[in-house]
Each structure stands twice: as C-alpha cells, then as structure tokens.
Image 1 (tube, rainbow, N blue to C red):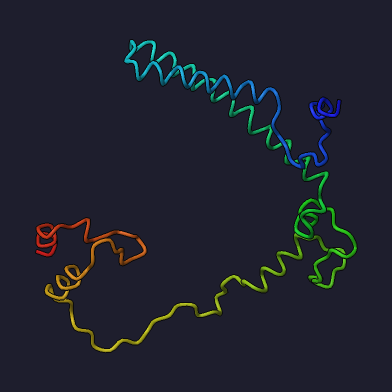
Image 2 (image 1 turned 90 degrees about the vertical axis):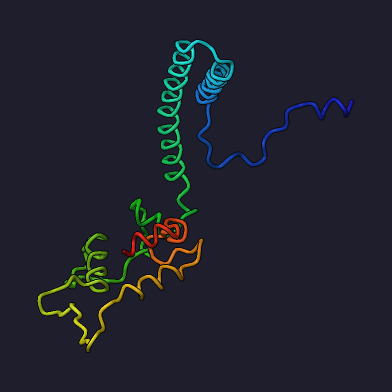
Length: 190
C-alpha cells in the first residue's frame, strides 16, 4: 500500500521564483523545432528548390512569431517579479522603482533644498565628481620636445620584421606577421 503512495504527485515545496514559460510558448517552440527539422531534411535530401524555399520561409515566419511572443512574455514576467520581490535587490532597486524609505536617501542637498529630487541629487554628485571642462581649465597638453631625428626606412623595416607572428602590437589587434608576408613587407616598405 505504501508503494502506491509514492506514485501520487507531491506538491512543490519551493515554487519557482521567476518563471515566464507557459503553454503557448511551448506549443510555438515545438512548432518552430518541427519546421526547422523539416527545412534541414529538405536541404540535406536535395529536394526541389521551391520546396526548400517554402519550408525555409515557413520556418523563418514561425520563428519570428515565436520570438515576438517570447520577448513580451519575458518582459511581463520580469516586471511582475520586480514589483513583487523588491527585497532581493536592495537600495538600487528601491531607488529606481521609487520604493525608497526614510532610511534610503542620498545625503546631498543641492542648493540646500531638502525637497530636491533624486535626479537633481545625482546630477549634483556627477557634476562634482566629473566636472565639465570650462574655459578656465587648460586641458591641452603640449609637451616641449627637443630635437627628434627623422624616421629612416631601415628603422621601420627593422620594427616590422621584428614583429612576432600571433602577436597584435596595438589596440587595433592587427597581427602584422599574419597580414604581411615577407614579399608584402618589402613592397609595403618601398
């Protein structure tokens, strides 16, 4: 008798906290998978071009419908999760969703105004930490350089030939060893 009790469905002790999946998404996903398999089957078997194109079009159309259904469903589930479970995120979440309490405040009063908005406080902090350049600031750096010898072709050739393969010397990540063969290097330098 106790063996048959184990076949009964047990209630879930811990329900999923964030779930967006539903029956419509499952049906649409299965339809997309079935159409994709049909499309691939037609391509690999070498079917008539019209059949391949029609199955490909049907697959792409159904996939677009599935994605249009998936994205809003995810967004709605996330929004409901955020509205119902604000304790998981703390201060940033409460600040963004206007759920601040008396203990959550930014301790800055721009212009000594106690009723200033959060946006004003953040702008005040950003202006203090990252001030915009003014005409009084001299932000241009002009170094004083003495005599510099001009570059010679042999110097450039020595630098390019010394580059190791598989190494990218600059931020552009160009591998000169791979890009230029020995003949191209000579043409490039002449």
